[in-house]
Amino acid sequence: MRHLEGHPGIKIGGSNINNLRYADDTVLIAEKEKDLQQLLDIVKEESEKKGLELNRKKTEVMVVSRKQELPIINIYIKGTRLKQKDQFKYLGSLISSDGRNNNEVASRIAQAKTNFQKMKTVLTNKNISIRTRRRALECYIEPILMYGCEAWTISKQTQKKLEATEMWFLRRMLRISWTAKKTNDTVLEEAHTTRLLISKIRKRQATFFGHVMRREKLENLVTTGMLEGKRSRGKQREKLIEGLADWLKAGKSLEAIEATKDRKKWRTMIANAVEQGT
Image (cartoon, rainbow, N blue to C red; front, side, top):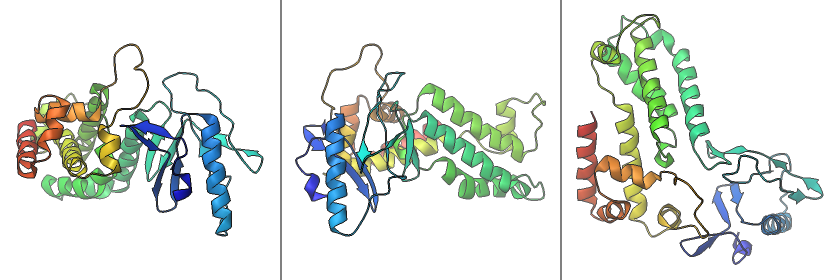
């Protein structure tokens, strides 16, 4: 991919980024249609020199925009126009055209519930203690639900959905009918637990964030760097780092970034936040 160096991409923190790669999964990024076509042409040409060919059926394009009606772009491989999507899966996570993670969280919840149903005979078996069944839930279902959560921005709406999912699991494990008028507090008491899911997600986010901030690499840049251009009108979207700073009671975002440099202090802050959240 060295042949892409110097070609227009997007500017983050003053650096030009035009591609993301993991093994053979590649994403090309540009602000303009003509620049994206040029990047794709370069990859196609260099691949053919190595005896490789781009799969037109598996290559798709997407526009990231706040506009409800997305702009149509025309990108081609050998005269064939590539299919334009409003979301695509990259490394197991859904990337959406609106830049939000709502669809990804909804997908994770659906997958977790499906796998819960597959293990229903174990997870709802009252001959097995609720503590053991909760442990099975943590080992086999929660990893599916929380996959990729390190990059989630958790809005109030998203938090409500995740908390509702947590209670969905517990009510079914206790075989509580949906018509039974039991409060969530009663369900938690019967399950011998408290609300833990959001704290688990935040802990994973904070641990990963600290790791990224201590590295002088691309991950650090795209997490903290500013995109060039003007802000849109209206209320600005909440950022991952703002949500973390609030959970950790670390003050403003910059103060949270500074705190990550002291590994021991950062771990203590995470431990304190987890304790207060349980």
